Length: 207
Length: 280
Image 1: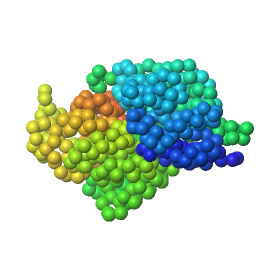
Image 2: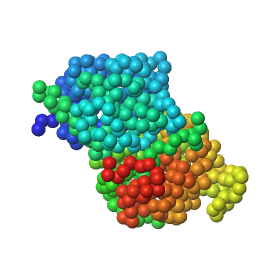
Image 3: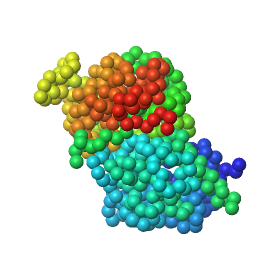
Image 4: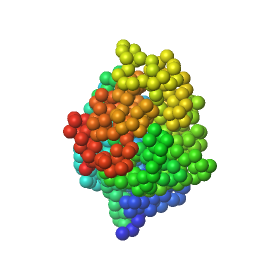
């Protein structure tokens, strides 16, 4: 089976290597890169990340990757945002008022509400609401979350977890997918999700 | 909302691996050391057993520690698919950056943060609070808790006018700092989690210092990992139900095969504690 090229957008923040290694493990040729040519060539694009909305958005712009992310999401290739990489897809976040996000998805990321500790730093169970190729095999799976803010509950929320109420855990919006949890840190179910993504990228590249 | 009233989440079980020059050791009160294997293999085994995270505490003293530690983090990132934390000897943002870029999810800072708490803010500003764990080693000072006497034997050590004192250097050096005030300050500076070790209990297998744990949990809003003293599975249960810890850390009880992480999870679930099932 071919190893599809996956561009893991490298904007110089914390641990991006885990995402790359996990994608490799699940059959990809994953590269940490900020190179526009390599990104254009990739069968799939991953926007990973840990950290805060403001500094991450600034780092993304500084690396020139905001435009690359918009192009990749717009041209229909499989696209996966992870954790802060999910939140950056929106128009903005309560975490950084006045900072524009990528605006690939509509709405604003908001602080987790309810009588819960923030951040949610724990494993939690997924409830899949809309089946998607990305979430195949992840019904009721336990995955690892670290976040204080969450995406708006809209029709593109494909899976939720319960944390003082339903919280957006995975997004499926045509070719744009995203997870609030860290699949690269979620043991077997997380690797399964990444394998699903690699398979989608391979199928898109072969089509 | 005060953190102490927040609905408890799903408790995490975290095996801790003490690492010296790339090999796992477990100190009994950090003095007698016994070799228990390759850290990456052990961490991978714990991943398969259902551990929620793994902590590496690097106690390497040699001058080439930087390379061996970065190599350990590299290898772990390739084999372990749960979050892992590395601590020990992190003094600067550069140290933290190197380990995070190599694949660590979190760094824990101890002595350097006691000496210069701003280090926590510097790391959090660059990489986010979620990757900064403040590791706090504590001994009882001998001063009674407000509202009553401590329920365990106390030792007169630092002599400050507070019940819990921060120690550094593996529990040998008193600082004169109130652990409760320090925990509050360090989380205000950006620590996303506290790894709280009772140095009175560490290596004793007598169980966590539950009063210490509960006191810190109630003082801060971030998750607290209880550490020091686990000898039985009941101790893990007490840490969550009585200590109100968000996570429990243990070493020897897992390393020497007395219990698997899966057994610990089943035991905690049977006690009514929400945990990720080991089979999930």
